[in-house]
Amino acid sequence: MLAALRLAARAPSVHNTQPWCWRFDGTRLHLYTDADRLLSSTDPLGRQLVISCGAMLHHVRTVFADRGWHTDTRRVPNPQRPDHLATIEFRPWPDPPAGVHTRVLAIDQRRTDRLPLAEPQGFSDILPRMRMLTAPHEVALAVLDESARPRLAAASAQAGALRHHDLLYQTELEWWAGHPDRPEGVPPSALVSDAEFARVGVGRVFPSVRHSMRRAQPEDHARLVVLSTDGDSVTRWLHTGEALSAVLLECTAAGLATCALTHITELPTGRKLLASLIPNPATPQVVIRIGTAPDDGDMIPPTPRRPLTDIFTRVGSH
Ligand SMILES: Cc1cc2nc3c(=O)[nH]c(=O)nc-3n(C[C@H](O)[C@H](O)[C@H](O)COP(=O)(O)O)c2cc1C
Image 1 (cartoon, rainbow, N blue to C red):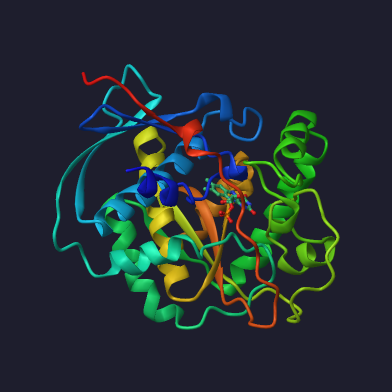
Image 2: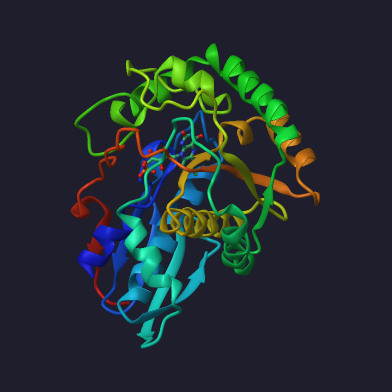
């Protein structure tokens, strides 16, 4: 159990807040939010907090599947306790689907890559697999065409400008990003220089760090993918996180680099613009950049995680 959770805790989360907490009652595993980790300015409704927990839930289910356990999952089991996101019951599963093992191997290799990327190799082959993975969660996956990029870049710049003078947002960002040697947050090694940021054009503004040019290609050619749902609710957000995790791991397993982006979804104008760029009227939740990281670049080191004792407790059976 502990080794499985330790691996699954490599799941991505907004600002690497890791806002999850697991309780094992001797039979069932329960997922709760850790409300102390809510980004109250960036994410006042806790949408991204729940999406992050959904990513962790998918990582856990994938790891247990690989170890021969089917995880029957009840989502948001108690509407009176919205912090209780899921309950998992285990039963033996001797023959999990083939892709599970490759996705588990991808967990330790996945990184959020904020640097410019080359075009994703083999994207048309992987696209149907991504859609197959998001469909059971009722999360739609739309690929934006190149003509959408300048509009997304403009929305990204607008979000950055609006946030620039938002003191609470900036304080939150400064607290969570740019510090080395912490068990949480986005360390300097995961951030980019001003020049690299400018070449990507659609990234969230983080505190900038000094790096020399780490990748040769002049522009970002990552494909932009939008995950969206039919409406907004805790259950929809949880499913979005699960779908996000599946897409990121599938891409990593295929040798592709990824970066989740949510700053454009945090403000009404950005969400409206995104909604207008996807085929069916839907609620956009997350944008993902998907590309190929050139071999000539530095390897991005893994971001830190909290100790297991902070996120896992055994409780008496009930
Ligand atoms: C819900 C969610 C929102 C995120 N939003 C952004 C974002 O707007 N910009 C960005 O660069 N990274 C974003 N990320 C990536 C996280 O910062 C990243 O997962 C975290 O720092 C841990 O690093 P890792 O993914 O390399 O393990 C997001 C991740 C999640 C799950």
